[in-house]
Image (cartoon, rainbow, N blue to C red; front, side, top):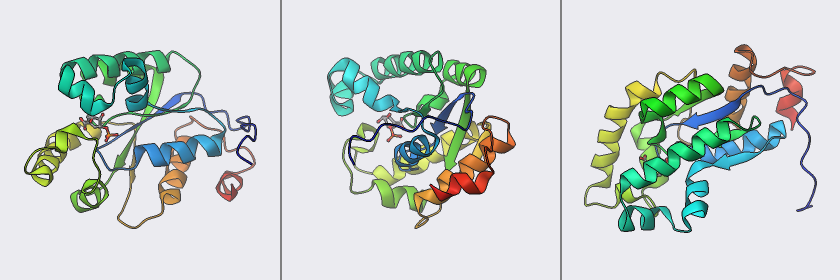
Length: 197
Ligand code: S3P
């Protein structure tokens, strides 16, 4: 049933869930499923920027520069955090900005989807569309990004692990549990009910 109406959320999500983490962590896939489960909107900041600029991300990096992209990213995040609670998947660089971390901390709940290098690499190696991995040594770049960024991702309010081969549902369920524990989601009828969907 492609046009089925979206289920209203009965779980009382009280803040926008902001998914952060490196490329390949599964932010978009997990985010879409989490939003579906909770009956709220899913937004991908990369997509929003592409629509607003009417260009793909590689085109934005090529025709403008990374800073132009980061400005768009900041505006999208600020706009969405001022809106109704939803699930927001951010690009891997979004949480590096202090300004972004502050507004996310004030108005949302940050969730780091943590994965190890090999898991990330297996997921991104054959995909295009990520300008930062376009050079001669993409795995080396991913390694450097991991080392530089993990200390910042680690400041997220919630951290969940995504292991190679794990179905995305495991990560979705881990996030739901943590959202309930931290008081951002009500366990209406118990967490088991959520897991059945
Ligand atoms: C980036 C990650 C990409 C995208 C852009 C820059 C980064 O998003 O925002 O290419 O700095 O790590 P994903 O993490 O969704 O691949």
